[in-house]
Image (tube, rainbow, N blue to C red):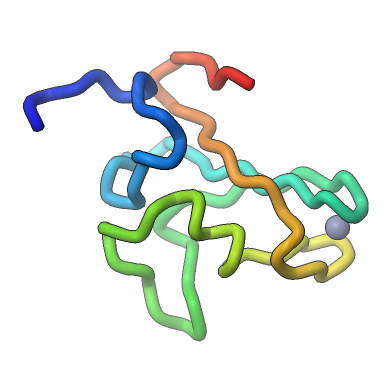
Length: 88
Ligand SMILES: [Zn+2]
């Protein structure tokens, strides 16, 4: 695959292993609008860290809103620590 620049990937291509310390997964709740930032190494499913090949977008099925506890109605994006801005 070569050394593709981080932050240039399409969201659906980004996997957990692409995230470095300092990068944050942004979780936006569709139901209440709450936004949370989760360090990738804090993401667990049933107490177990997710494998690195997990697509970041799949976190929408894992993470839930910290505010209203809604599941599966969250939008996932990545806040790259490297300074590149997310696009929307
Ligand atoms: Zn919510």
